[in-house]
Length: 445
Ligand code: SF4
Image 1 (tube, protein in one colour):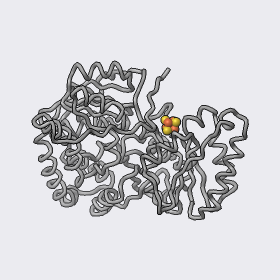
Image 2: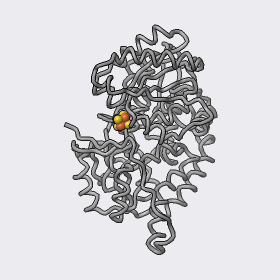
Image 3: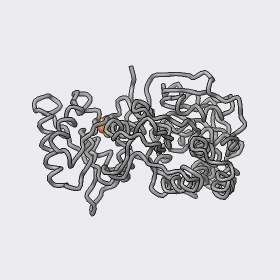
Image 4: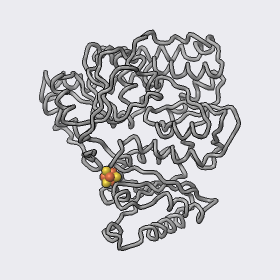
């Protein structure tokens, strides 16, 4: 299949120079991903081996579950563990034995590393191996790190999914794997669009450990989230092939993402158009409403969620905004290259962060809208800049056609709010000051 209305911009940003800086950075840690992952994997349990701060982050981010058995918890490392006076591996065995005896519904147990467990070099891979032998076949034990020492908050999901890939069964079947956690309703929309084109898709992560998910040399995979670099590498090591495409944000991104899959599976143009025409029209209409506020406005991305490049593509091309700087924690061109191709040259592309220098650039450029983490948003608001919290973008359904208007609305709301405040400062109550648990100002070497 060819000519699925590809975007026409031919001189994108893929080869633009990238400003790389290393210094203090302001991000949430990878434990945050547990909040959405535990909802997707219904027989999994996430056991964080961490501190009271880690426990507090999880509790405050997820809310306290009073009536349901939670699917995550924290094994607190006490001073004796941190000082090496107790055998942390033995303690961990005890905690896991008790947990699994009490919760026979658990089929997958993730041991999740944190800053403290990394600092004392607690070998969770060894622990997971030992526990798998002990509790197989009823429970599979894996490990990944959610530590804030070297990660951004979306890397927790990446590390979790990457840990699952090596233990997936082998298959020679020709199949499509969609990779990334989405709210069920949005995942269903994607699967429904593909099945109308005659394409069956499986999803990583699967809701249960006993699903028929497998991988092999005839597997092709489409990433749903741009922050899945380690998972991408793990799947390629298993012989699967990535289908590069812009990410499914907005009408254009969704169409291009679907087109890459449709081309791979030989879907004809008429079928593709018949399936996508109505939702495309709905998406365009919904985006147009929010774009009235966004068009002509300027934009600055601080690095945070790793969604920055696809979102910059969406906001500049579909909403008429101008990007001054697009900062991302990491830029994997194999993953975000197709989005970079579509962004018109002009914005500064930056990777990593030295927050003070970046704040200077943002202040000098005075963008109409700044997308950043919670730790920067309130100070910048106090300085008169309108901000959008990047973390909202992973907690809100924003992918595919039916959410395209909501996605644009997430960016237009702060601008409208600022306009209203400017005309009537009494129209809003005291501003929520955000939380601090898990916010980890970090200095890299
Ligand atoms: S940043 Fe804080 S909450 Fe996150 S893993 Fe480190 S200690 Fe725990």
